[in-house]
Structure formats: structure tokens, C-alpha cells
Image 1 (tube, helix red, strand yellow):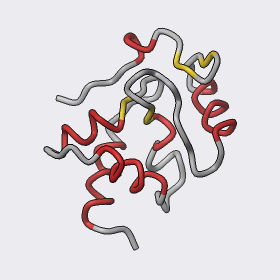
Image 2: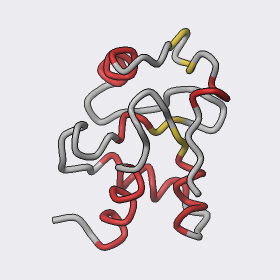
Image 3: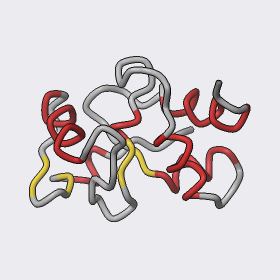
Length: 102
């Protein structure tokens, strides 16, 4: 059962549209905290499918794809299926693919 904090992270993550990515830092800022690792830990525990909570769309602030509970190769495959090009484990055209929360 997800915690209140984890549910907040998942709710924010659901707002990222297909074909876009966001970062652990941007989710933290949206929550009003600086606990980037806590966001990563919550996403690592995501009990939902990637279609319900698209945690695969969360990457590092430098554009590297970062980790994924189901494996980095799966994360890369899902991102590419959504139209996000990944080269050397980094998002191509990162600035254009970055989704910023309002």
C-alpha cells in the first residue's frame, strides 16, 4: 500500500504526457521539497503499471535516463516506443522533450 507521499509523487507523475520526460528534481520542486532521492525511491516502489503511473518518463536532470525497477533496457525500450530517442542512455533533444509542471 503506497504512502501518502508516494501517492502524491504518482499523481504528479501521471501528468507527464506521452512523448515527454521530467526529472526527479522537478517533481520534488512541484511537491515543495528538495528530497530528490525520496522521489526516486517512491517511483522505484511504484505498484502500478507504467501505463497508469508512467515512472519510466522520469530521468536525471542532465538527461541521462537513470534507473528503473524493471531494468534500464526496459525503460529505454518504453521511452523509444513513445517517440523519445535515447542515445548512450541519454535523452536526445532533452530540452525539447522536458515537461515542466505548472
